[in-house]
Image (cartoon, rainbow, N blue to C red; front, side, top):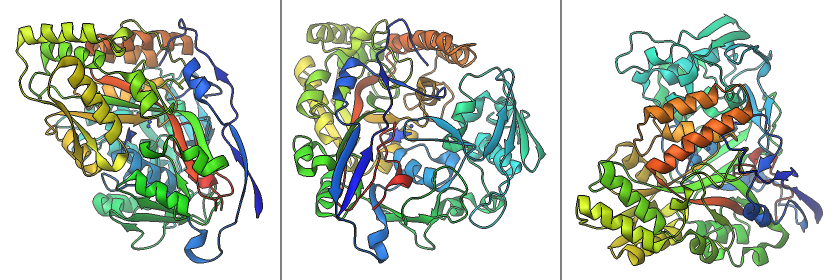
Amino acid sequence: MINVRFTQGGQSLTLVDPSAIAAGSLLPGIGRNALRTKTITALAAAALLATSLTLTACSSDGGGSADIVTVNGAEPQNPLVPTNTNENMGGRVVDRLWAGLKYYDADGVAHNEMAESIETTDRKSYRITLKSGWTFTDGSPVTAKSFVDAWNYGALSTNAQLQNYVFSSIAGFDEVAAENPTVQTMSGLKVIDDRTFTVELKSPSIDFEDSLGYSPYYPLPEVAYEDMQAYGENPIGNGPYMFAGNGAWEHNSKIELVPNPDYQGGRPAKNKGLRFVMYQSYDTAYADLQSGNLDALDTIPDSALTVYKNDLGDRAITKPTAQNQHIGVQPNVPHFAGEEGLLRRRAISMAIDRESICDKIFHGTRIPARDFTAATLPGFNGDLPGSEVLVFNPDEAKKVWAQADAISPWSGRYEIAYNSDGGHQAWIEAVANSVKNTLGIDSIAVPYPTFKNIRDEVNAESIGKAFRYGWQGDYPSMLQFLTSQYYSYSETNNVNYNSPEFDRLLDAALAAPTQEESYRVIAQAQALLIKDLVDIPVLDYVAAAGVSDKVSNAEVAWNGLFAFENIEK
């Protein structure tokens, strides 16, 4: 037997003054300004039940797969190319296979990884110098060109990368992102030598440097450009892990990684490998966790939320995280365009009893959403103008629904799509029932087999109904949540929001001279989102996770995922 200690971040928690108002990957979900503290609501603070856990566990059997850490996963939507991976299940693998200029520790603090230095005097012009000696797992060197070429590939419109909006702040992006680009590379990127390149932004950015650990900024080896689709099926990176040989990705079954012996960064693997096991049900995953067939599960199923702490004891983990869940609907769905659509979204939002859903289904592991980001992020304000639309108000909901009917009488059924492999059935059914009982309309939850199924239809704008979706922070900044999902030109703008005024406010928040000014402008941007109610924020997360008795050390990070490199058996 061995004595074990779990660490849950140990950071200070600061309640937000409503006057200090602010600026991750789609959940099946995820900038920051050198995050040193996380701000959370008093409710979330009360829900922080465990920050340091101790226990006794038996060490795992030696040899073979017993040494591999098994963690929950699901089939990624796309081949594993960093600039085209914008969802949780692909992202958790991508972040293990690559190293960027920076990386984020479990508390969300950014550290240099491949960057030796990132120099700027004006937050507009940057000179980046790489550490020497880094290679990809095929043995080829990682150079300044590896970064510049990858960023240009990601930005070029003809490559149709889901994450291309990330490069929008770089000079020359507009030209390469045009529908019919006349140039192939951004003018703001220049290779100086093998270890040095420069970046020129369109305007100063308060978020740019800290965003450089985000996956679209990862480098690519030259071999990737020979066949990007094939490369994404068997990727070559420079991170703490690499694919465990041919056949490492068994689609809809598992992805197996082994430590990269040549990795030189600050997050080396403390285990002998990772196996991402693709589950169709979190109930099945939880049963495997209890039986010792799964080592770490980042989402306890709804069915176990009342018992998992008793079941797991000190192996249960609870922590507020930067994750949310929303209900979206695209404007091509009947009754949801224009003024009628706005009124219907407002009525539906006020018809949702968030408090009851959080209490009765999630038992304190969710809190009602109060904005479009997450309550744990720096600068969060839970009292934005107009946020009363996010509070259960049956009488007002009925009144607003009637106003929409005066424009065009309601017909049909209000359907909410969810993916069955994500543990969302109970709360989506509760939302549908709350809407049905409040507004007196036919409202149902519609299951899709997998997250990939629902994302493919959302991206193709063919889903034809409301859908649940969430965001899990990629770096801890409200700006990352907002720019990724609501910039008019973002490929991850799921609801086709197009507001020049909102774009202008986000640009101003990024260009703000101080963090406090950025928070002030972001508050204005979020107030506009509330006025337009572009989608319906429902829940923020308090992570409920657990590990098996074979695990001796594990930590849930700021974004709700395990710090996979640090899991030990």
